Image (tube, rainbow, N blue to C red):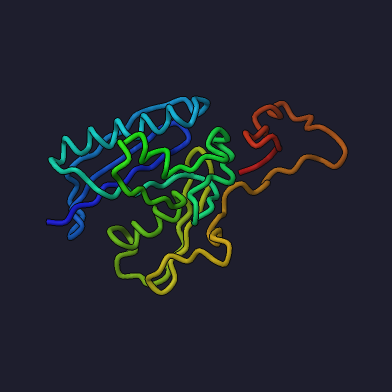
Length: 195
């Protein structure tokens, strides 16, 4: 039976799972916490450790690994162009880093985490019989994915469903926040009031 393995690199946790492609039965799952300030190479090592643990549990070595990660990417190179919650990944070629940490003999496929969630929801979740859907993710950040006509819709620049990182509480013109919770509005990107 055909199986697939996927990894989600979140703001504080790397999660993973292996499943049967037909029917979606889980055969392995796990997670590992990490400090998002550690270098990219350390994140690749944690991803590789989780993949190897899941493979042991599933009893299968996967030649292809799917990775979802928050941010904007150059789809041709796998370079992370922007990631507000993990700026240490910016400029890094995520698929190459993960593949190298796994010994180099793997294909690593990268997609935005919310896009992966939207496609997964259509494949195995509430959207099974739906041809068009929009999914909003709420976690360390806010994200979104769009499926149109049973296909993941990316738009001309690959960011069609990117709902995250929108300023929802703007700074007053010309002045600082004077609210008692002002420090809570500071975003990892350096701006204020982002959602």
